Image (cartoon, rainbow, N blue to C red; front, side, top):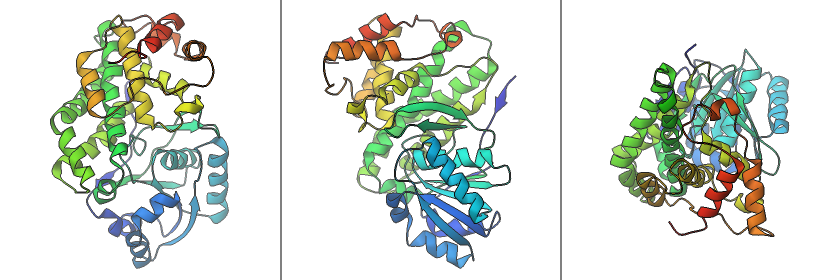
Length: 356
């Protein structure tokens, strides 16, 4: 069964924060704002002025830590206690995922996501990533209900640290490198074909426009190239994740990423940076110890880490433990054209100790 789960609408324009109230008004007049202190500062005063101009009443709540089960439950309780008609999430992946999770649990609640960075496809993606308090991955929670609207203001993203855009580019291009290997053993899977086609379009955009978009972000300028790359990071990557079939095709690099989140020494790496390093590990396994040259060029171009940070204790023993604790569904592993094992993972992780 082929299924596509996506937000009902998407709007992206420069300066959109000053029109946020216009977008919200058709949905609700009594809302809860869920954000982070940094994101709230980035969108104001224009956003609050727009809410006031459209007679929208709101209460605000900040997420200061991870998207945990406790944070999701607290937000859900506060939304219900307030009697809010709509949850307006403003921020990065942790904020947006928590809001999506709450919206999925409350059938009558409207959700609008406002992405303030393009570091992941979280604003669009049909899952919420749940972590523990230390930032370790707990699960990727499928959503029963998607946001009603996703908003993006390219001015806000142009003003953000370029490191976020680079991480978002790599997180998005990972979809192609993670999905296309499945095609070798599954040539007649339409859902898989759609995922790979969408991911390939994003990859082509990164090759063509990525450097110009990064330069625009560094100069805090909104350009056509930056706009297209923002859409690729959020929409194309999100859409590639939105296509489903009976047989799952999870990304192997993301499975490696999930274990890396439990390594305290890597906590300062962004999601896309962990994914970038994990793509290198996947490529080493897939190509018998020699990474794909095009992938390696892209990882270097976007300043991804190509070796693990200093690790506490016995480095070799820690790497072995990481390899043994990477989890990947056996049914999905059987669909890939390369063999996955703790030994293969250990050898690939150790190979990244060399200079690429």
